[in-house]
Image (cartoon, rainbow, N blue to C red; front, side):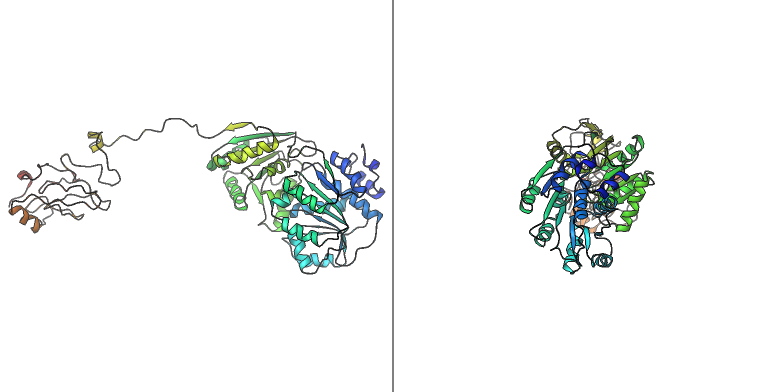
Length: 511
């Protein structure tokens, strides 16, 4: 097939195509349009950016041109379901563009905008209704629309519909459609669940697959960079500067993650905007318009929002987070290398995403080139800092060190009087080992602070008994130092008497 005029489309449609400078159909259009014109149900499998929308829009417009009956109030003759607001708006634009000479009514029913205006638009009936599943069900339940007059039903991006959890809504919508209808399924991939859904809803469909399932665009240069998770924002900012970026589309896994990427890029001096489900429709329209015009060079999006982004000139796609659904990888990188151009897809992969990468490579049947930007592994750990002079570890490398307490590194030469309770350095244990965290005097007389010794300790000494040992509450049962041991100003013992012996009298005051 060399031109649209050979497909047998109605003259007003061919004229609109000529005005838009569309002369030669794409492979999916050349193969799908004849089957749809003949009335066959169809499953169309093709990559994003290959003209799937026109593949069903043109024959549907031809059908409406040849059957110009007016729709009944609150009904639609053609129903097209798409997963996102942006894609729905794009489909509406294509119908209006190629059907400009047919005087048709095309309505849009999407969330994020007031429903009242949509109810008013549907009241007289419409030829074509493009809708997202959630808003369509709202309109049906509010009795603003009935689906029993739909003659053509289209499910676009069917795989993404299932990924987003719309399968129950789709089945509920199909139950409201007439049994006799013309049904079309279009998708970039065809997983088993989609195939089962198609078999239950289509009647003897013909399958048109112009590319192998899950084959990525040939003109996309794909790379993977292994990187630590916390280093991803800095790496993205670096690549946006070093790569020849015209427009960059960055994919994050979550809405919150997309906003975080925008903030990180702003700190690095890069202007970026986010588009996701939490944004209002006006915000999303404004951001997309700025991205198309080039005033915003970097757009951060989630998988759900990105399905409707059809912007020429996207030179780079960055997978900031690898998708946990491998088919989403095909959709993501299909945002670049559109209309015969070349593109670059760079994916960041941290340690937790290696399984996702393996699933992607298995699906696309190719091994992606890797670049490792992680810190070099296998190097020896950095040495511990040297011990301070005078510590017990510096004096005796063989003895275990209790470094969990502030006083643990300053033990006396002849005892352990330097360990204090409750994490505080203890100045000494005198008079029978009772200290309780206070600066107790070491001898029987007055010390430098002018306080008297503990009288109970004196009683024990007068009876000639050895000093009683007491387990430190945090010392794991270590004995207290012998009675009368002299304690220095920073917790070191001056002398270390033998257990049960007399203390050094040189360090004691007069009796």
